[in-house]
Amino acid sequence: MKSVFVYCEVENKKVAEISQELLSAGKRLAEKLDAPLVAMVNGKDLKGIESQIAPYGVDRLFVGDDVRLEPYRTLPHAALVTKVLKQEDPQIVLFGATSVGRDLAPRIASKLNCGLTADTTILDIGDHFVKKEKKEYTDLLYAIRPAFGGSIMANIINWDMHPQMATVREGVMKKEIFDANYKTEVISVIVNEAVSDTDFVVKIIERHIEESDVNLKDAPIIVAGGYGVGSKENFDLLKNLANILGGEVGGSRAAVDAGFIDHNRQIGQTGTTVRPKLYIAAGISGAIQHTAGMQDASMIISINNDPEAPINALADYVITGDLGVVIPKMIKFYKENAK
Ligand code: FAD
Image (cartoon, rainbow, N blue to C red):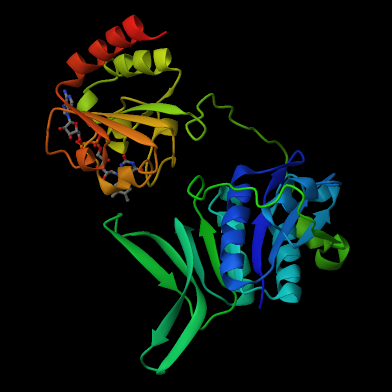
């Protein structure tokens, strides 16, 4: 059986979160196919990098280690990955739907003349019967993603192209160590055999990394506000509640568009995907594009003055009322009763 291949992103010797999520998802697919999991990582000073990758159940790891490979540049990375993919000939190839993955994957798909499904949120293995050919194709990648503005989930199956390639959104796949002591075969890629001087024609003159103190993905508690919060000032109420609970503040796209809260706090299909222990949704109606990014929270409390708001169907607890009244009461009672 041909392998499942994951492209890992690395910077400063640290494998990216998305790559760890992809390795976990890739291992689940590989197990279903009874196939090996193969990964590739390109960067500089990567000695020992396998210790971060092997525990996800990686059977073979290709390492391109060269000072010129970090920071990322399109041409040398594309050349390296293409060379290894031609040699390895995997059945499935996964990239993160990050700025790097979105740059690299289409270029490689074009070089290999195969398809690419972008921004998937669910991956599975299944069969497909092609009526015209009267033929059943088995063990195919089901690349599932929201389509038509999130109103449907499309299952994209690519039965006549090889390999089957997809980019996967950040934060949607559960990170799972397969075996902390898993042994992987490390294969050093001879970089100069894959790249030429012209691949380095783009020079990086300056890099600016925007620091952000927002960490929605790892927050155990999120207090999220929607258009129903009404104003930027009213969001202070939510900030107060988040502060005393030790959580983060998030928002719906309508709240972001209205300027109540910054874009980097948007939760949902075009924002961050979160899975906190507790998600408090205040003044959020529960559009599918929003719930796509928070439905895996362990507990959901909805505060809404409309008892029929769709988010209530998803919530474990519903508080029907004006959030301007409910949230101050929550703060008051929490302060009185918290030990
Ligand atoms: P509304 O739908 O206007 O809901 C406001 C809610 O507040 C209502 O339920 C109302 O009953 C309640 N309310 C009003 N006043 C009060 C009060 N005083 N007290 C209590 N409750 C009150 N949306 C996202 O959130 N994230 C995304 O990533 C995202 N991506 C999108 C991508 C695409 C391609 C498209 C087309 C849309 C996307 N959207 C996204 C937008 C989404 O469709 C909805 O428009 C949006 O989620 C609605 O936000 P909301 O629930 O805050 O606003």
